[in-house]
Image (tube, rainbow, N blue to C red):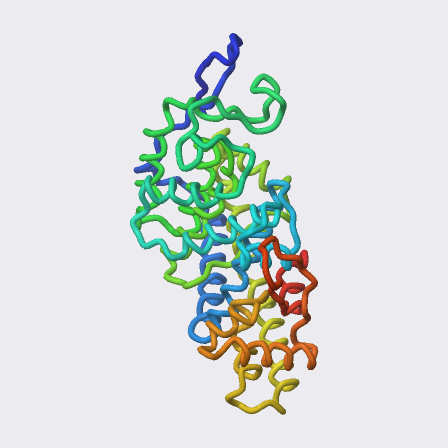
Length: 370
């Protein structure tokens, strides 16, 4: 890619000057095309498996995506802590920041086509809700300063992003590319993500929003409810990921698209394995709870735990349409059978403390490195 000279603190710096890609149709070798086709096939098979009643289990994998995407940026928290932060909305720790990542992943998957600039800005606003590392005027807005990746300053950086004044034009172009329907979805997601990371349009959160964009394109183009959590694969090969983005910027697109396609294929295959593990856990729970009445709160709650793995009596009552007391008795019955465990958490609110239970087997599965 070309570069352009910009001034930063009185110093001359070379920043990337990305080409417009709205109408780009990259030429790829037959081997790379086969890789993208295999990835699309694997994702569609995962989509078929996760349709219908199994979708609630597949959506549990969104937590794995959010956890891994945040971990790539150095934001690490346990699945239990993040689920608790989601449930209470009172935590200001790293877990709350990671919970924001999970929230924007879910928000993006409910975003219909076409993608717009306003949608991207809304995603960023949600992602930054609890972040202390960004000024208010940069939340939900393009950065107004020079951006770079790696190094304490742009002179030492691994990548100096596009100048701030070019961002509106480049992002409008990227949105057009992301809405196209004539490219294969895997190539489209790979290039859209790499172009987004090259532009680096936000003051913070670019990696996380860029990976949300992957999920939106894959979900929209392939017509599946839940995309596999590709961030898990990226986290396993950060070096390959960063090298691929560098080669993209050096106009060696082939390597990047093939690496990306292979990561997507592995992600879909691993997700099928995890789906099986979760289904086995639920089957065991049904066996453990079979002595409860079929219409009891405890028996019914087994089916809801993938969507509320950390739960209070009030949350269970809302999910089941029963009283808080009935929900509490149901949770206690599940705890007695080892299906949930009561958490020792201190609430920041005044008054009688809320009791919390966690389906720790589920949280262990989605929080487990693979």
